Length: 81
Image 1: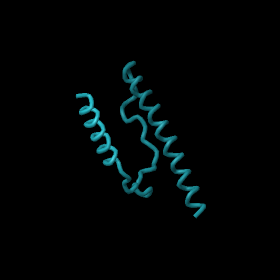
Image 2 (image 1 turned 180 degrees about the horizontal axis):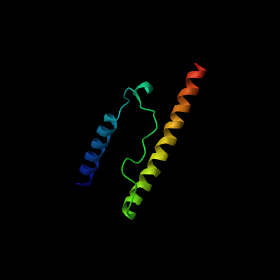
Image 3 (image 1 turned 120 degrees about the vertical axis):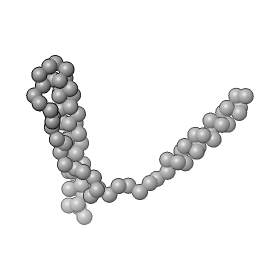
Image 4 (image 1 turned 180 degrees about the vertical axis):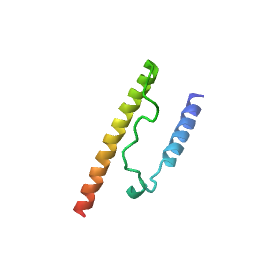
């Protein structure tokens, strides 16, 4: 029984690894590298709204930092070519 389960697990694992093969990457020109928009609702009036706005701000700042890094890498790559 254990050996059968081990063989089935191995077969499933190999099938999953084969399905994760190399795919064509998305061209960088297709990516949206513009900064993310800010809080779209009214000024937070309650503590819950303020917490949501703060979480949104944190996520947006993180996303904008990653976009700036990607934009810089692309610009450096174009300068070298």
